[in-house]
Length: 251
Image 1 (cartoon, rainbow, N blue to C red):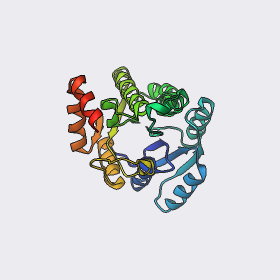
Image 2 (spheres, one colour):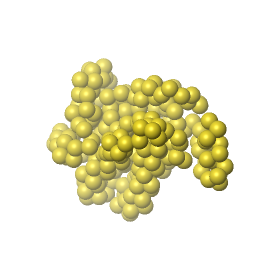
Image 3 (cartoon, rainbow, N blue to C red):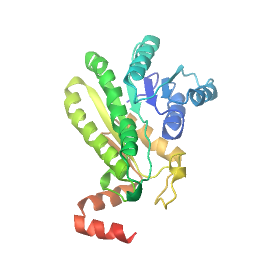
Image 4 (cartoon, helix red, strand yellow):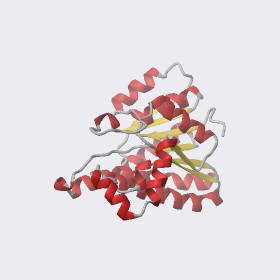
């Protein structure tokens, strides 16, 4: 896929992977629709890219608010006329120990990581089907592999997202709409900077962005990295439950 002059919507574009992708797509002279709750950061990002030749629209958007998402998509379509690619990247995580387990954290994480993506897709699909083209890029995680201790809500949300994306990939294929699932391991971002545990094979953001952009250009179904973590996740998936639980308890 040639990205030049494509119109690309990115949620969670104010920092981390979203911000990095915006910079990379600007180098491809794409039209950018940048969405996030912190519009001041979006405006700073857009200002830093003003000499790139890209046309950039920044919009404040909370993906958990369907009305707000609809307003942003409507405004983007009014401005550019079309959305070619939607990178649904908004996501949050929080370690929650069993002693502090509460449904409020679960609601917050699932609202952003799963329902926020679904709300965006719900509003994008009619246009994609009508045009018989378009690409949905959902950012999941290799954390979907198993239920990691203290991160049950996050792992479960990413597992739900990956399965949902797989499901709609099958359904949308006949309409000419591509669905790409991005499954990063640990990437150096403001989100992972908050982690107080060892993160194996932690990857620099710039390297992760190159992998994602190249994967989108090649229209891969699944973009996952780094390879040692991918292999580790595959091994964990096939481990018998009893062995996985024994190993986890020893950590």
